[in-house]
Structures are given as C-alpha cells and as structure tokens.
Image (cartoon, rainbow, N blue to C red; front, side, top):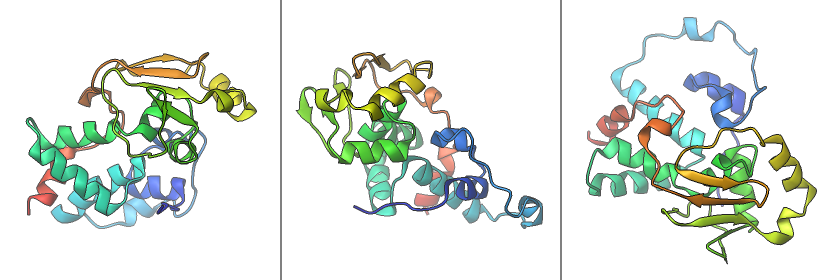
Length: 200
C-alpha cells in the first residue's frame, strides 16, 4: 500500500491549511516564516492544482484513486465538486477519524488496514471502503480492550460529532445516520477549481 510520508506541518503551510484539519492540534513549523510573502502570484492552473493537492493531502489519497473518485462524482447527479467531496468523506478511514476512534486520518487509515474495525459485523480492512446510511462501524471487541483504543476514546471524549454519524464511544461504535453534506466538511476547499482543472 502506497503511503504519503510528507511532513504534516510543512505541507499544511504550503497548502494554506490548518494542521487541526488533519487532527494535529499542536503542529507548527518555523521554517521560512516569510515564505508566503516571497512567493509570486499563482497562475490559474497553479491555484486549481493546489485545491486538488489540498484534498488529496487532507484525506491521504493518491492521484490514481483521486481521479477515480472524480470520474464517479462526474457520473452522479448533482454538482460534481460536491459529489466528489461527499464520496471522499464516506471513506471508512475518514469515518473512523470523524467518530473519534483515531487521533488523525493517517492513524485511522493504519488502524483500518490492520483490521481493527468491522462494518455491519464483518471485518473490513480497506480504508477506501465507502460507507452508506445504516452501516454500523465498530471497533473489534478484542481491539476495544487495548490501551491504545481506551486512551484514544478518552482523549476524544469531547470531540464534536458530525450530524450524519451517531456515535457511542463507550461501545466504540458508530452508525451512519444519513449521507454526509457539503456543509460539514470543515476544510476550506473550493471544489469548483478542481472541477475546472479536470475539465480542461
């Protein structure tokens, strides 16, 4: 499985996003503090490319898979950009993070890959698995008793829960109540720029 090993704080600064979106509350970087002022004005293409890179970095998606999501979103009814973000938001690793079962999306992806979760009672170890309304995502009983999950659930006890998920952190269980909406995606993304990029 391909991994994105980019330094989080440095990449967040380059893309103009807050590390908190990635689940890192204390990450900062002091490298090249005047860098933003030194850069030239971006071209239209560079601006569009940055938006795509932003989504790929936040959710940990590589180019081939991102392109597949775009093509699927394009074939769906409604706005392609919104469809794209909602599809990505439905990834199992993102749901695990949103439910507070992992500290970051990177950690969530690793935990899913190591088969610590079930969907509707069946083991699923594919981070890109797309959940749907009615699906029940749960930490495996053998994993729930481990200190790793106990500490994470305790640390995330007050973490806000998105409205499309119903979460019981004491049981390590989350139910997908409805489809996610564009309004609840907390990263500042101009998805129309991504659509424009792929439309060329």
